[in-house]
Image 1 (cartoon, rainbow, N blue to C red):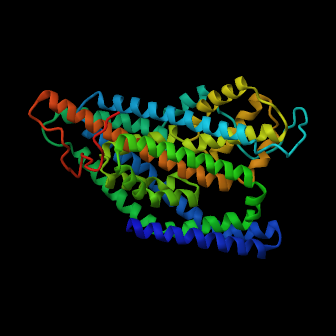
Image 2: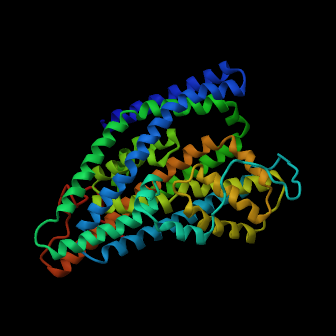
Image 3: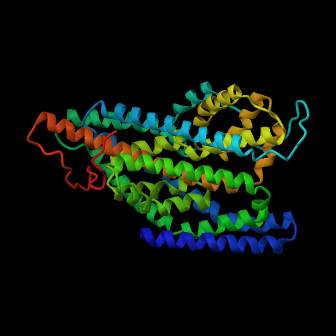
Length: 443
């Protein structure tokens, strides 16, 4: 499906979904009837997300293994990993600081004046167990690759693919001819992208049903009631987007605007469905068109899905301070710094967890003696917040992947120049490995 055609179809689906949801919410009359109506729309959305989950695991495996097998230098993987993690940690810190800064400045929770009962415990339906550094580190390593793929554990698939791809790269150095396994993996990647095209034909319909369902149940009135919190959160996201694109402009030059145009479709898809997974195939396709080598995209992008959740990080800081303000609980600067550092750790284990950001908030607030009932304040509007934070995650991962690819290209050009001073550093268009649209700046 054409990129611009998909973008237009998703845009129309968003508008129609909001209008139909508003009409059905008014028609329903009662919350129970509204949920029953929404359940029929959820059917289509669930089918689409199931299809996406079906292709994500083999797509990540095939593209990452293929890319690793093509990496000739042993230190390339470690170098790219270090650059990616440096970016991810810095971006996470910026996201948290923006969220905490706006929440402290405008205090969206003030005025609710809720009363906190000592040791109050409520049932939120969220699984908050296992959010510890020890559990996260252990969980990174798969017990079984089939189990990891069945559960779409992106980080575990990444770890196995690293071992598998590195072993294939070693095998390539031991044999003169091209490995049969490498050829099979390359063909698998092509097949998975073709299947992705089939699945994406359902994307506009899924966008329509997802928004219709959410607004049918919650109604547009909820946006007015929580207008200050939602408005500040989206203001924070806009500030973060500006910073990310400014950094992208510094490293990529004017081509960052072309990148912004290329990721419009996956961005809107992520926004409407509140699912980063749904946008993964189209994000990878957009980066391919931008000129990012597949071997870098297939490594950095899934890594970012586990570590580079900029929008989610900002939401978590907003939510925790909103709850504290709603119950008139003052948090000192030191306490807020500790909360920030805690979120930096706990949020890294959220890939693949349903409503992960809310789960992190629910798991974190008891650590600082905040009322657990506060989580109920944000559950109602979580769908609307989730749309923004998911779209932001797509932007953050796209820019980080493009910047790292640009830096790798510059390093390769510099190495070639050192080896042969007569070699020109001007990039030559190459559909497989070069990025002619990337600027000449380096990290």
